[in-house]
Image (tube, rainbow, N blue to C red; front, top):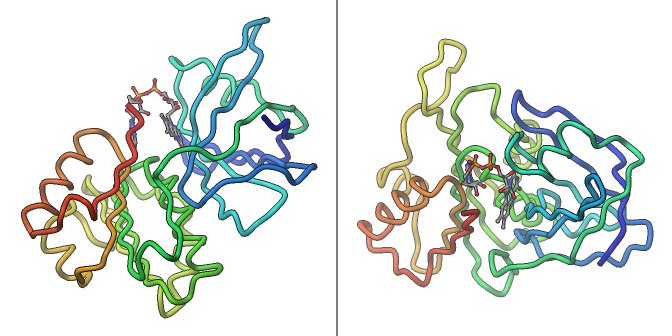
Length: 231
Ligand SMILES: Cc1cc2nc3c(=O)[nH]c(=O)nc-3n(C[C@H](O)[C@H](O)[C@H](O)COP(=O)(O)OP(=O)(O)OC[C@H]3O[C@@H](n4cnc5c(N)ncnc54)[C@H](O)[C@@H]3O)c2cc1C
């Protein structure tokens, strides 16, 4: 376990706050795409929530989380309504099999919807920062233009030759000039496909099931599809 300090809180969209946690001891470890257990003492009771890192492990000494508000979940609610810069929280090391390392494949397609983009942006940032030999495409579905998380970083990283992104808006909006509609087989085909591509999916349950069926329909083998389930 690690005690870390909240060093910044940013309202990143109407529903999502980004939390930066400083790890003064530098002992916290994770792989790009993993999640942590975060423990908070609320009214004398220790509560726990699971959250994916959005930062890349190549940035040492801190991590970042992006958390969508919820009044139901005690830790998520505490983070949104009570957490302040300077507060300490306890976290586990990075956990789970939803991660990317360079020896796994030279090509990844990262498919996310809404706040489900969090573990994908960690992998995206990691590859942009330190894996130039890997080709990464982020396919990101958002409900409205103001829920486009990490827009500046995504657009900047996409200037690199190995980094690409496709963002699609699911609900019509006059302020959006980009792509609209759901993620389809044509979208994967237009992004280019190869036999060694790994597909990472994270989003609401229905979206993960739909995308998985789309990938199967275009002959992507099950062992090349990696899911993150929050439910
Ligand atoms: C491994 C893991 C990693 C997580 N990482 C994050 C994170 O980085 N940021 C964050 O805000 N929450 C994350 N969560 C969810 C968080 O721990 C709480 O479950 C959530 O705050 C509860 O909100 P709710 O009760 O309003 O859920 P609801 O909004 O009712 O959602 C129901 C379930 O579906 C999941 N879900 C809903 N929308 C999405 C989506 N767009 N993509 C993926 N799953 C979805 C929810 O997490 C929840 O488990 C993660 C959960 C797990 C298990």
